[in-house]
Image (cartoon, rainbow, N blue to C red; front, side, top):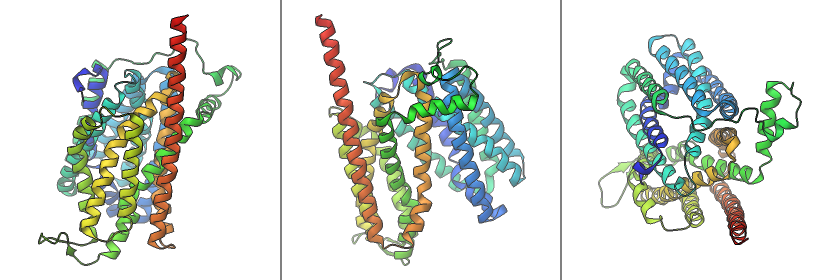
Length: 428
């Protein structure tokens, strides 16, 4: 993946991403259980909604500000607040104060996300972005696997030490960012966005923010991309929601995993196996698959990966055979490994230089909507047969393929036009 050939900012950022993701995953998956034990399920549910709202608000604010003052300043301020919030969580024993601290934490996580993404895009080139996002994807999944495993064994009795560990990892990231990360975007003095030129100088801050996001929503190809990405995320989230519930209900008693193995699993065991298989395959196959498809066109890799991905999840949503489910997850994960780096590179190539963080904020919002769709699917699954859910997944996959077919076709036409223009200018 040519990691050592990347810009130094990207190398440092990917290593810090690995460190902080690994540390945070020791606690993040278990926070719902942590709050439920102390405050009950209903209160925890409302708290979760509040935290999600803080993340959305932070994403909008951070995306706008990072395009106005630069990426590094936003990242440094946000990481400082995140450090203090985790440090407070480690030493405070009140669930309500902990909740307030997590509101600040998630607001800053949301605000820093677009800045992190824009920073990597700023110092990358179209020809190496697929390799960069492949490395990022692999490192992130490895960090999730290691952190989740550590948290599973230690969180129940040692959550103080784990929260303190997260705070230390953020402090290390903050110090390295201040000392070694270079600012990648310095807005021109007096420069204003196209929308800003049309507004009065005395316009309010909120009007300016809304104007910036209104410009993003006028970018039709970007909107099609975010909708297609929403569909991908929505289907993936169903594994631990609708699909998980179905497996637990349909396979209440242990069944033979393979005819040649004396291993039996019930629905809950099978769900855990599918999640583990997905993580292990991503960690083990990413480098191999990136090498195999290296010489293929991005469009072919993207569309082929999406076909495998949606077919795999559609079959997982329908089958009750443990062996078939594991095989289907293999193909779904293979498609995931193929399409995600190409999809991220496609996104990076379509956003304009002056508004990268703003675009990333909108992209993050659509991703959050995709994650939140799990509740809607759970409600729908209570009223319709399982075959209808499978049909919905297949329909979402078809829509996604059509959207990406149009997006990549349009992108290819634009590149051809740019190449012809360059050649004609050189001839002239």
